[in-house]
Length: 123
Image (cartoon, rainbow, N blue to C red; front, side):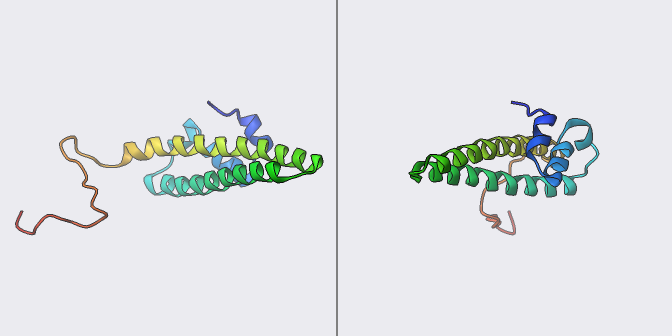
């Protein structure tokens, strides 16, 4: 689902909105690998923040005996859900060009060894 820029502007801070605009098609083409990596890290942090906030708002609404507190928690849940969705989408948009920039030969495959080279020196 594509998030409308006007809706994003309504819910985001200035810095979050700038990151959102940078994830859109014309702007993202201007970045090199390092700049995209930095934005991926920031988008991951924001995604994690807002998905955690969604969980905490759900818990708060479930535990609260007060109707007004449940209403505030529900409102916070809706906002947090929209922002979490926005940052998930942004992260996906940043990862696509980053994957295209990473050098990979068609005939080779990276081994998942936890960063340890398991081949012997003579092999």
